[in-house]
Length: 486
Image 1 (cartoon, rainbow, N blue to C red):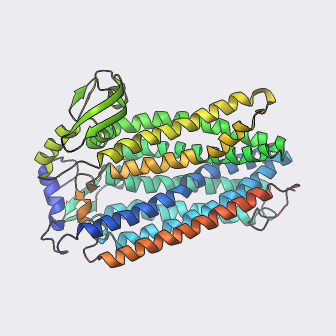
Image 2 (cartoon, rainbow, N blue to C red; image 1 turned 90 degrees about the horizontal axis):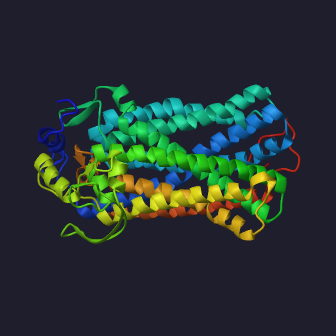
Image 3 (cartoon, rainbow, N blue to C red; image 1 turned 60 degrees about the vertical axis):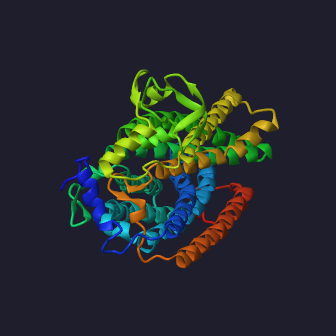
């Protein structure tokens, strides 16, 4: 049976090996399921704090080194090495936290791994063998090659590392997008088997998710650079140097915010087509509706499927979802009825309140970042610097906005897909390891959370230490690596 047949037969065949009479045993208790979801959610959100900053900083550092290579202006070299140090700290922490996720597939989600390993493993293997090898190898050459490689070749190493970082993101997003919209597979003896790797890599969900994530990563890195530059400007340290850095960050942030908006619009349209329940939950839309408004604030009754209060922008949701003012958008109650016919009895609604508010806050925090960048560009035009200290303090506080937007975006993406692990094929309750027990999952949940808390303290302390040190006073072309001891 091949993919693409959106029928009840496909869902039943895919789910049968993981039913209550599964050959892997009966379904685990909800306690184990909930603990496993909490554990994976915490590790994923924590890991993704480092990922967008790494992606964005890699390009910014490469751009600054390119500017130094072309102009030979020492300030660009100083900025390259300063931001390069912070990039390396963040990169190392991202690698450490990401490894834990791979172990969880075997420990907590072995039923899922058995079912989708043939498909899900392919893009992840390509990421490890191609993209991660590319970024780690050339990053090593960049670190140790400052006084050993010709300048042009050394510049190429940071660009190849940055490109590898972005390619790595593409493969990982391809794997995740397959969970959102499975393509290029068939069900054989209760397992999903890969039939078309090209279909997986060119999944329509991947093609809209990748630019959205990359623009979000650039926005995150730009806010980080802007906030730290604002701290130096507030302290009146290296004012000319960090004005250049701040202006660069504001331009990147504003352009990225525009990119996030457009790519998010395309992503919403794909989501409406492929996962209408997620979009309906994001808008607390209970019944099918034409010319639907975009909800700004709603108070609803989830049990009875209706809203008591709903402040809206007229026609906004139809425009977002269909590109027309009178487009029809499916509602939660109607989708629930259709899904019960298609997939059998069950509750196919996500946690509506969580989907609704995570979607709104994601947009809100991203919009605030764009507003800060636009205001900063205006205040710093024609060589000026803001006179008030409030502007610098806002920029410093603004560092956290894209991190919040990214985290909320992923929470919405993953929680809005529930109750599915692989949409339309495998339910989350059937994906957890059948041999998992409450004590072991609870112990590892607490253990990982504590370890990550310690790592967070280490990360922040390292960043603050080298931020306070600041850029080296005099950086020569043959200067040593921008290592942590520099």
